[in-house]
Length: 415
Figure 1 (cartoon, rainbow, N blue to C red):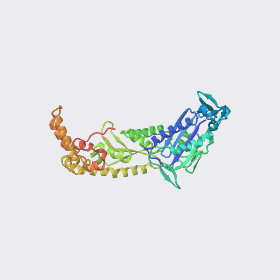
Figure 2: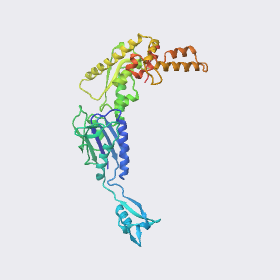
Figure 3: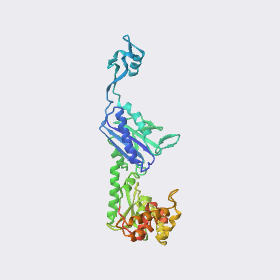
Figure 4: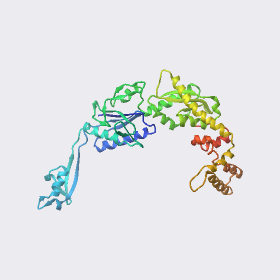
């Protein structure tokens, strides 16, 4: 038999989904084994609105198990050949008759038989427990005290072959229908273990995480190539975008050429870290004034999506451009002097004090290592100099990068 179990929710945090799938599979495997239900394999599926698993090859009943259970010592269990309360109590607890007890190695033993139980009787409680016990960094309560779960649970699907299992969690009863894409196919879709992936695909939901990730990469790379460019596809961003959309649709946008005065690292940080856009470059060269966003919706007019992407990026990239031009008005040596106003750690002074300690340590090493003292002296004088800049204050992930970009020609970003 094959089992389908789906937890339908409000949109899940993208960073949580991979961990949730791993935990869901692990818990399911552990509890099926504890319930003596063997299985062939477990498949997991996820989108921003659902976590699901398909368990294939389940038996109709759990395995029959016999075990020998040790009881009290023989001298305490029988007196003058008659059972004592210790023997009768042990037999009752083991679920056997006193006459069925045996004596071995000075102890009383009982053979306990666990008969198989129908899987359809075991699974409802097991599946409900998976929902309640699924780990999450933070859980929430909603409605009339429902939960806790990472996001509100809106529907459940629990089908063992063609049978709907009576699973109920957080006042939500399981059924046989899931939900399609929120806009492209908002109706209910009947599914089971065999039809789950294909039925959802027809409803504009790519439930297979691997398939959706490949589609994100293919959509972005193909769109960039069609314009003669190359999409920059960092693995972390690909993973995050995969868990942000159910039906990936790549859209290329552009921004003003004047922003190409910014270092590639700044452009990439704004696009990747702040907007979840893929940068675009001329193959082997610098970034260009194009970017690719991945929408989870395909409206009749993609220009509306493109325009929205361009507007939100314009505001953020303008801020970066302003900070960059303002910071360039002040030499790095003057920025370095402002380190005295930045606290390093209680008892250890300011960042300027730290920079002085590093400079002294570097000077002591200069005579012992084949180092150019002039270069070392210049580097030490600028150590941590970009910390007081507006750019690093707004984009702290660019610490160190900005000092290099300021003193060197604008570098070519590499993913």
